[in-house]
Image (cartoon, rainbow, N blue to C red; front, side, top):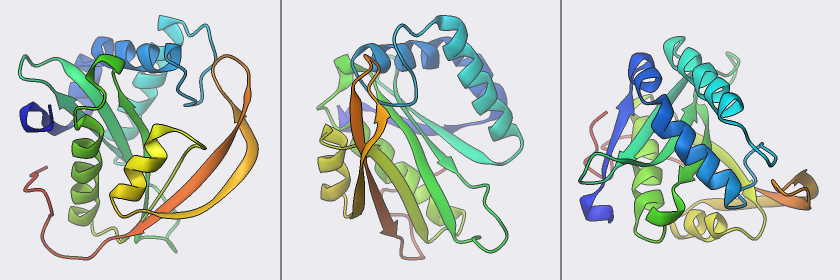
Length: 186
């Protein structure tokens, strides 16, 4: 699917217009066991509130939200770049909430989103990216393949949606300034 997925940055208004699709992705991922800050059962109301807050953060310039769409225009994935940091960290950004619908996984969607969010970070003159993921998740392998450096693990740092303790693994990546790597244009 990576050749047939389009990744693009959304404005705050576009996030608001896409909330139903984003809610569907969030609920699908949580129901699939993704340890992304939510517990089961997750309500549509709670998911809507999450995306409304994200839209507000986009409007304030505190984050960038990207989506991946398939050839039919269906939103199949999303990722965020958090850019709001203290003045002594202007070079830093966090990659957050990488979500891919279960029926679109293992088709290059996450890799496309990751490459695009790295390009957006370069465009924003960010040179150090940080992220965390559930220890032992498929995402760990994705980040390692994409050149991210494992920093370490905190055991029992959070819970899976069904209430089991899980570890969190932290990664970082230094970005080289210059041209974007994927040809992605924000």
